[in-house]
Each structure stands twice: as structure tokens, then as C-alpha cells.
Length: 157
Length: 120
Image (cartoon, rainbow over all chains, first blue to last red; front, side, top):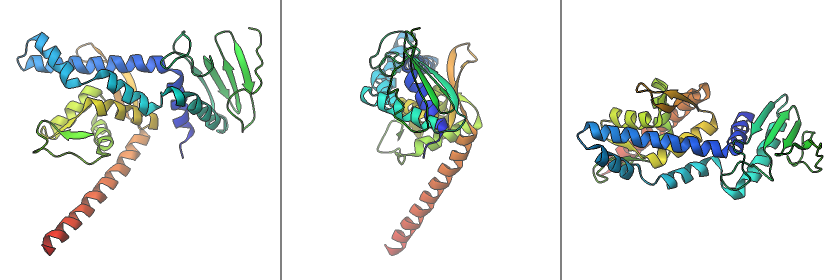
């Protein structure tokens, strides 16, 4: 049984997919640089060290995909996981939190939108408010539910 | 997956699931970035164990998601931004569980191997 902490981290990751990808790329670039430095200190020329580090490090794209699989970034599961995650968090008494989408672009596998244009979700107690780029998309309350607003009540913002 | 570094015929391949244990144990000593974790495991095992980067980063994401480690961007000694991983209280507890499971496995394998040797 996974606790609210797990679902909180999961939802944050799902909302912040663009940021996650950027950080992972930076992290892997750092790793390759350190490998190249080490090879250079063993006597390789900078160019040869860089090439060797690239070879040793392996396929960065594949590595990124595997990390994405771990956190559940497959397009077909994001919406489901997010709905489930929010539902789990709403069952936690007194839980409060907010998720932001890191990117300003539209949907898509690595885009900012978590689900149907949702850019932000705020959870307080057993209520969840979903916002898109234009404003409030809907509010849901009550312990059990779909985790997604059944009736969308745009506030005109 | 953790592999013996160069020569698969001479260097042992570790049992599946031991990578998490190695990472958690390495971070118990001090917070480290991904490269530092890989280097520490390699160095401490006298170059017997090499952590593939393709396994290391997915494993770190899994540990983050479980809340067993936390990550923070910091500057290295050479003034380069890097993501450092720290063991959390939950991670420390998990390390104890993983360690105990591993020791049980090793002891059980030892018993089976000794028994086979005696029978042979």
C-alpha cells in the first residue's frame, strides 16, 4: 500500500514532466563530462576523452526513456495515474498541496499539460481544484470520486 | 543491473535487485551525485562492480519516487552544478530491510552450497 507521500511525489513528477526531463538531461551531461575528465587525467586528449565518454555512457535517449518508464511518463498512463494519485491524496485527511505544470506549451508526451489542458491542481482537505491556462476548470469535493471534475464550472477568469 | 566491469567471464554479475541496496548503502556514508555513486561502488569493490549508467539513473528515479532518497542541486568542488542524492529516514529504514533480505539470501545459498559439497 503506497502512502500519500508516494502519490504526492508521483503527481508532482507527472505535472512537472518537462522539468524532470530537463534535469535528467543535465544530470546525464554532467556524468559524461566527469567521465571525460577522468579519461583525460589518464592521458587521453580532450577530444578522444569526450568521444570515449559518449561511447561508454551509452545511448542517452534510451536511458532517458527508461527513467521515464520508471516514473510512469508513458502517454497512455499519465492521465490514469494522475487521476488515481489525486484520488489517493484526497483520501488523506488534512492533506494540502499544489501541483504546477512546468511548461507553458500544450499537451503531448513531454509537454506541460498533465491532462486535458490541466495546468495546476490545488488540494486542500478533500477538495481538489483544477485550473487550465485560462482559469478555474472545476472543483470537486467529497472523499470518493473520479478525481476529475464531472461538472466543469469555469469561473470566467 | 550491476555487472562485472569488463570481462563478463571473470567478473561476477550481481543478483537482480542488489543495485538499490548498493546505492542506499553508498549514500549512507555521504550525499553524492550519480557519477559519484557509480565511482564509489566501483572503487569500494576494487573495480569488480561497475554500475551501468543505463541502470543507475532509472534506479535513482525509483528510489526518489519511493521517498528513500531525496535530490538537491548543489555546486561541486569544481563549481559545477550537480544533482546530489541524500538518504532519507525512510531510506535508512529500507536499507536495513534490504540488507537483512540480502544476508538471509546469502546465508541460505551458503547452506545449499555446503550441503551440495558434502553430498558430492
